[in-house]
Amino acid sequence: MKLGITGWVPGDPAAINAQILSEIRASGFSGVGVNFRVGLGSLTDGVCSTLRGHFADSGLDVVEMGMYQTNLVHTDAAVRAESLRSLQKAIGIAAKIGRPSVIAGGGSLNASGVWFPHPENYEELAHQRMVAALKEAVKAAEAEDIILGLECHAFTALYSPEVAKRTIDEVGSKHIKIHLDVVNWITWQTIYKTGEAIRHMFELLAPGYILGVHSKGIEIENRLAIHMNETPAGAPTDLLDHVTYLKEVAKLPANTYLVIEHTPVDLIPRTRDFVLAKAREAGVSFA
Image (cartoon, rainbow, N blue to C red; front, side, top):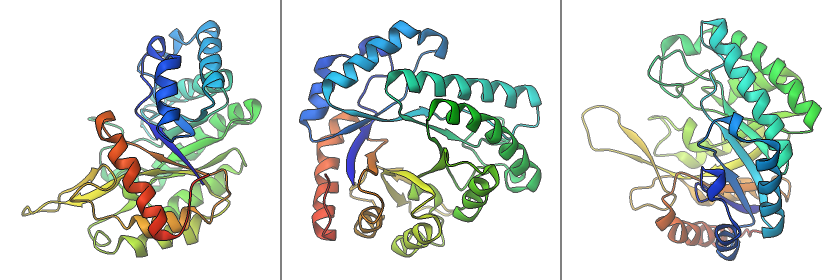
């Protein structure tokens, strides 16, 4: 397996330069994720060519390109169509900057955000809308030889590993896989036995369904209702069984990336060291 980082590369493509990428490479990472904070229309062929050169010169793999605001379950067909167009455009951009996988979510019917809960997210109609959109999106991925990775979450239409597996099977293409973030499927029933939950996810999805994995932690608060938050991996309150996680990731193909995410830049060295220490404890290593 390989070690990557997302959140360190600037979201403004104009701010991505050789110095930043060299710092990332020198910090022990071999791959990066990119999450652009500009409109896709500003990522012209010239900008993409410049970025491709920077990444190639740095020796870093561009592992993933985030498209986390897609909504493929919305009741308004126009909203779904716009998400689909954005996703197709992102796939074309990804091909131009170095062929990273494009990571997208299924969406939500919650008007406050595509990662927030709504009861209809779990209904069959939402699932069918999502699958229909993904069947169109994957055509662009096939044309560009890009993998479309699905980021799943217990609040969204991709609310369980079983549903995620069913989705991949129904779309029916080798160009769509799950980008596994185990924290997103941890529930109050499994928060104190995350190793067991992790093993179940991998038993169900590995090896053919998993594109790559994210690394972060999870905590539960002392409050009078259920409050769980994600944390940087290895935070003092982190309850995730990282040893089990790393053992399972190490069983995947050798070029699989574990990408540290949702970690402030100043905490990345500490988080990296924690992940490396847990890898040694698990008896596995990064290439």
